Length: 91
Image 1 (cartoon, rainbow, N blue to C red):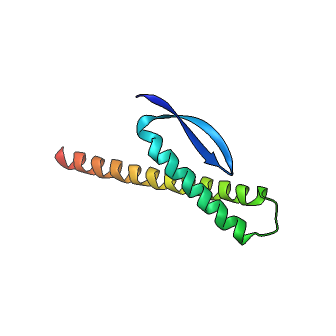
Image 2: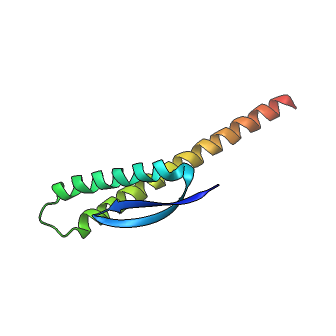
């Protein structure tokens, strides 16, 4: 897979990120989602340090990731059970 450098902006800062070419659009879309959520959190928590919305966004992303991993694990276990049931019927 070919790697490429892309320029991104997050929190009014510019970064260069090395990504696989086929991940480029997903990275850009993810950064747009983060920027949008940070804007919402800054509006919700006006008057507080910018660190608070950033940390809340991190917590939300980590929680969502955890839920997705759990769901994937449950689906994987369910599929393995179904395969085992089919195999036992074939015996």
